[in-house]
Length: 58
Image 1 (cartoon, rainbow, N blue to C red):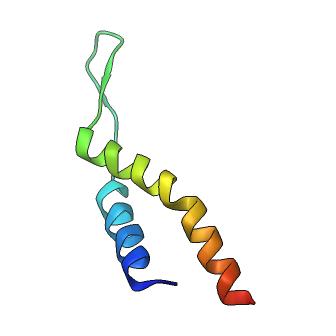
Image 2 (image 1 turned 180 degrees about the horizontal axis):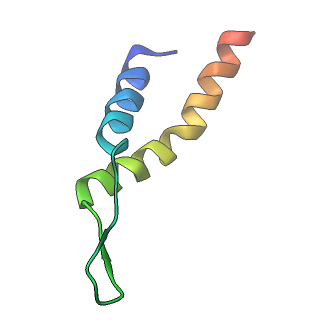
């Protein structure tokens, strides 16, 4: 896997790994926006990761 892609995946994972919801007590929840953005980035990187792994197999 490309070192840049691996670093991006690791960075996003580390940032979002402790993403938690906080109950505000009024039926709403609060989450850390930066951690949520990291989770979205991780999801968006998934196709690139799969393609990189497939390339390594061949």
